[in-house]
Length: 68
Image (cartoon, rainbow, N blue to C red):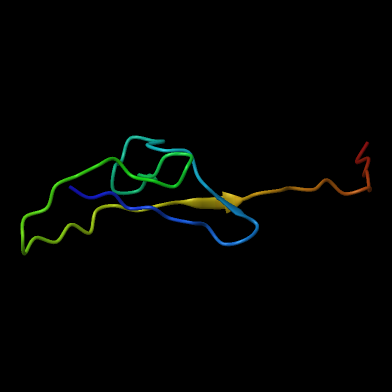
């Protein structure tokens, strides 16, 4: 049995798991960066596991515009 563990680069977080209706496009890792446990045969390959990344922080500027 196997699991994939992903460590995001500095300043990034793993995006929420299984968001949206298309499993080919969503992130398969949980909030710790690990996938569910899966089984592979001796010569099998499974390239369907993937991770999404989002910025860890956001900032708000100090300017306000009024279009009135």
